[in-house]
Length: 259
Image (cartoon, rainbow, N blue to C red; front, side, top):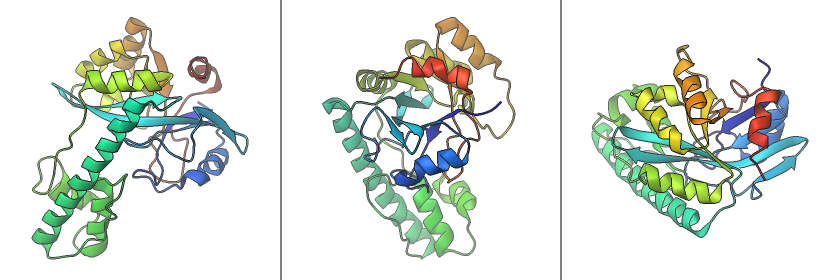
């Protein structure tokens, strides 16, 4: 499939390595015509309009918001964002929580390993920043080892986040965004439970670069059952885009919902 639109991209505004101003060129280099910037718990200030054109590329302003359910965390994607006061206040609260969480994790790692970590305690900070700092500071760790031994959910320096519940998170996004969907449904421990939540959303991420090659049949059934808009994206945290996404025809259903 020729990818026309990559609708799941992160930048340095959260935990990606691609600067926001470099997004259009990176999209063009990947042969894309459309890209959605979906930083974690932040609306990217470089793209204030819901949809804009930059260097011949359509850029959609979006956000990826983590929410809590009885079955665990889920990630929601909002597209075509016009920020409301309520969403802005919640994103500000989440950034404060991210900074305090990172501060606690850094202190724990420094105490356990006897190192000093260079982690910028500023909006957007997350576990990947701490893991990269561990890899820079200690020769026995790379980023994966830092997650597996120190920062993973069952590990000694893990700190849980204080995120909104599913209903509140979905309501905040629905008020601010033209389209709200469930991200990467087959990544969750219970995909069927996750997909059942999509019934109250607009969309679900159908195309995604899963590590394995799972059957997409459960996602396709949810799309048919709940009349969802299929989306797709690479979840890029690096500088190469387009590993997954939508072809031109599939993107039209998304475009029809955008401002």
